[in-house]
Length: 249
Ligand SMILES: Nc1ncnc2c1ncn2[C@@H]1O[C@H](COP(=O)(O)OP(=O)(O)O)[C@@H](O)[C@H]1O
Ligand SMILES: [Mg+2]
Image (cartoon, rainbow, N blue to C red):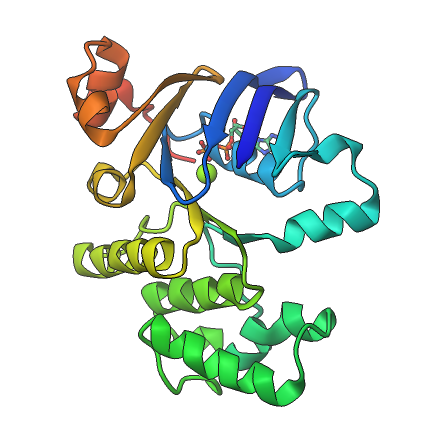
């Protein structure tokens, strides 16, 4: 399980996370919603140890990240795959090289096995046979799938998705939803999905938490969040204009 305990983070004196408490249980698909700029990506970066809390802790399977030595941290990081918002593929490398980069670096599998696993994962994400293409030749939705195959290559126990459907057309977005559900259920992976796409949130989430003003103001099932009488939550989930900032980040 991932536990986030009283997590605080400021940038240049500007508080973003002001005491986040959250538990992500093994096997669940936990969706985190909240306005643009509220700190969702910052929260995910704390879970993979890319950012350090000013105060509070992230605990992964009983290990407090801030107390880990480099080697232990590396072992925890290997349990967690992340799908970055911009996919973060290397343009100079082929699809196969991108997907295999981590496992080759860490010599996790023999080379022949790596090639087989890349082929299997590409098939699973619906892109069989594109090993030798380059990211520049792919659409946004295809890049997301390749990035997802890369995240799965390390056989993670947890996969973190940052806005996996943002910027995709509705059909492509829904196929990514289906893929996330399949990965969660068939592969037994625990998912944390950050999104402001409510259709996606309801579809993939069995738990939902809302981040607002640096804190988690609600955790519950999709049915429970829809039934909440908190006006801030209602405003957000109904996509009211008033709940959205005029800029986007
Ligand atoms: N590395 C950083 N340095 C300074 N400010 C940052 C950094 N990362 C995020 N922020 C700020 O923290 C706030 C939350 O950002 P973010 O987590 O990306 O929001 P979102 O909920 O849209 O993912 C924003 O105001 C952003 O500008
Ligand atoms: Mg973000």
